[in-house]
Length: 506
Image 1 (cartoon, rainbow, N blue to C red):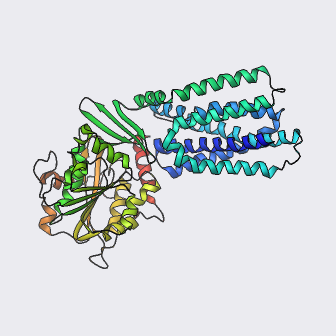
Image 2: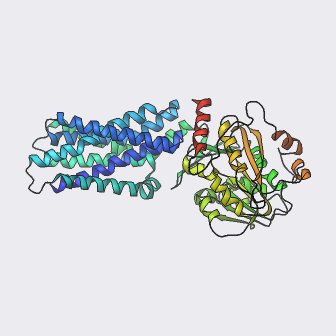
């Protein structure tokens, strides 16, 4: 009986890990984590119910349990490989994602009824069904705690799936030995083949990941790492370098100057003396490079969540060259923290705040474009200061862009009670991203000469007074549309963002 209760714990751990891997992979590849987690959980739980019902048709519960573990070891173990391979090859993941999820859920749902029947058959004196459920729930708790803290940081999605596939097969092997009198040669052969295949794949998991990354990205991969926060991939083709975070492009060295010059220099020009600057995000140091072009700058604080990103772009000479060594500049201080937490804490006021944050693909990121976040931000602005945020594409995610504009325009101004922030929407073409938008905001409306003109440092490749004037003009495809203010209470922005990109690219 003890082994079967331990087995219940182990298979519960593996089952929940497969579910979390499926939800995480779909969130990485498709965005909108709330939608993906909701769908994955719903499909998995309903499939478990189907499996529990199907278990009544299994004649020998011990052999049925063993075979379920063998199948789980193969399907669950190779689920992440199948999902990423489908995305790399065809750009879709629906069939491997939900096909494997239904199979894993059904097989997992069969486990407890089969274990209960085995315990009943062997006449375990102290068998109580609630004991089985207790071990099952404890396994789920252990998996949910270990997944973000241990499994993902140390294994990654594909290696984790294969490792827990081997765990299912280990449970199957020990169960085969315990019930060897009932097991036929076919079960032993199937188990040995499955274990050999899974163990071999686990041993070669790094090569599998490299092969799938090579298929997913156009250029040679020079760095690929998974941190507790995200997957970092840097590619190179000749002198062209690209950074991807969770498979989403962050910059292309061929045209990043267009993005970063547009992000930084208009807001710097709006402040009479931008001595103290705060950058939220921008761990690659490109925005900091542009900020440090301004001679008035005395200090820059760069707040980025992932310490590995700032470390890579500071310590690797060829990558540091892209940001002009900005992360090594004595005027710059790196703080690896959450942007919301940083703003909510105590600290100095800043003349300029630059939000170079990820797109609002999910609710966790959408809150960084909320009215509440902007209220925190304006509290850290010095008198006469200004703020800018990247705001996505006014073409591909038009309603999302104008929701951000509306949110800033609805944020109260600390300098003028009863009034809101003065906002300036603008956009430029960045070939790697498309038509890309920004929003500049100030507690007080700028003077007419400062609003019209643009004082720029020397050496820029893209931004000019003429470009700035053109950037404030929107056409019929990108101009204002009705959009709700984004708040942490309702989060319309994430849905606007997803719907916009789905319209163009699905």
